[in-house]
Amino acid sequence: MFKIVLSQINAKSMWISGFFKPFLKGCLREFKKNKRESVLLY
Image (cartoon, rainbow, N blue to C red):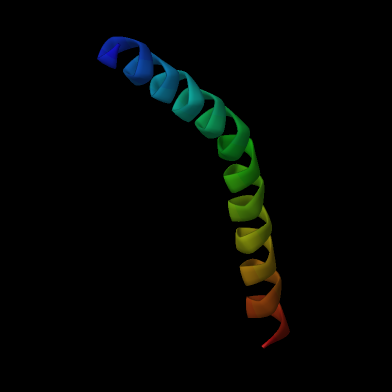
């Protein structure tokens, strides 16, 4: 019973990290790009 729940949580966290990692990487890239541009502006 407990193992099944644990594996479900594990699968969910794997799916969430698989979904969020590219999203976070994209956000980080945009943030760095914007930071560089704002440094150029000021």
